[in-house]
Length: 333
Image 1: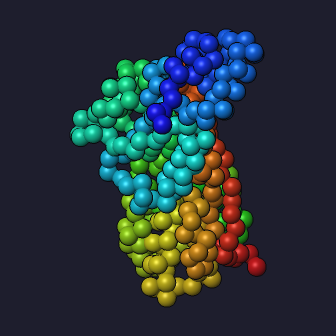
Image 2 (image 1 turned 30 degrees about the vertical axis):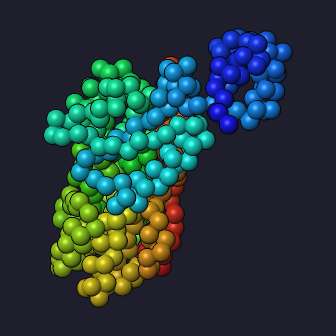
């Protein structure tokens, strides 16, 4: 049996193709009786609109381009993997496809599908170069940025509040009797400044002076955090607690502590930020601060669809909640 088209439905209903399109896309502009007649015929014929026809009528591709840092892998980072799950789940509900791409070559070029009109919007993941943002702005395509530590307040973004999270993590350690606290952060512009500032703010609020040997440490992954931690633990007066601004760093620090026969949390307390899936399964379970990462992905889809429709949208700074597990001891007892 030949597949019905939108023109066939219009002919059966005795209305225009535009009227049928309005019914399919639930748009106003037609009478209720016409809407009911078209809906009845669609139901009787089990008509499924052709996506390409829908694209032509609405002048949309129904594709969202997800652009990642070209040096990272979404599937190697559990934090971004969970965000991705939120994006995919929400896109399915909104009848959008998500096309994963990366910034192309050293010139930070946008993918070709942006210039060919095969994407209605862009979700940028992680740090985005000024060049790439300028090119997206010049193309007039709507975009939103996730977890990129930008200074430009005019760019719509969704970010966890890392400064407040680090402040809260430091305060939690101080309230548990720790004053010799080391912080290991990721030396990414914006992120490093936010997290270290939160640490200093909390120390100052409690009239404590950070140890200069402990307060400017950085890592890029679990392995480098392991090396930094081993050097820390070999000092004559090592810290009693280590604050890691990324959970994977905390896992590396835990590994270093165990290799040096230190007990967690009796000898050293460890706290992280992100609440990745592994943090609840390692031993001991990691005390951390977390944000609903699937919700970030879902919010990103909400925002980009609103921007596609021409609506004004504000940036979001999301709170992170303390999740108490087993890796911090109370030294005041």
